[in-house]
Amino acid sequence: MRVVVEMAFTVPVVSIFTAGSASGGTSQERQARQGNDISSSNLAWGSGFSPGVRCGMTFTAAGRFNTPTTINSRSVTSLDDPRLVALFDMAKRQTNNATALYVIYVSGEFLTSSGNVIGMGGPRFKFFNSTTDYGLYGHIVMSDGALNSYGLAHEAGHCLFGRFLNSNQNSFTINDPSNPGSDHSNNPQNLMFPTIPNENPQIVSSQCSTARQSKIVLQNASNSRGRIIKNNLTSMKKLNARIIAKMRFMKKDTLRRPVKKRRKLA
Image (tube, rainbow, N blue to C red; front, side):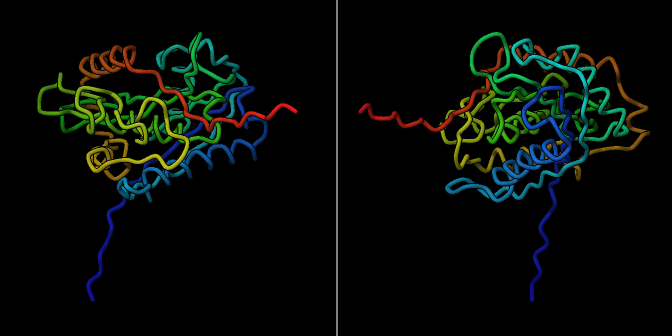
């Protein structure tokens, strides 16, 4: 009898709840929201939806923090907001700089001063020695509008797509591998379409294979302290600055919600 052993592709998730965020009032509510977002991510990136592929990735809870800090979602315009950076750094200290997706939940329906933006996400370098020897974190912020959606799964994609295309340090990209030159898919039913599908979001093989190779995936992460000590800090800062600059020009992530039926007037 032939035994087939499937490889593991584990993505740890650390959740950070700010005061007033939806489903963040009690420990039970925070656990439930983290669990729901992880379950949705496992549906999209794990079992998958036809006619897309089954990618077999597993998202797992790696930590959950509650902070008295209040952040109005409309005041958040980027992931390098100092208030967010302070919370990301706090969670990393508490987890001994664990490789993970770090997700901050802020209060309010939408991000930025206008529009219907529900989330932002992208990778950040943990350390850098070469284009093959480096580590990444995922940084994500989500508003109340992302509740009960595939928002985390979508933002995780932006983080997992961070990679070098070749041995040139300048080749690092966060573009969607299924749509070269763009940070999003152009298929409205794809998980990585800028308006996130509400039901059955699909991924394709190029997205799956790229995500599986991410340094955020636990099995790929290089957590050796020796590697981190040798970190090329100057290059790492430049790479992170390029990611931040790139994300300023990305299409904003919104959510496709079901259209409510209008009641007939009597």
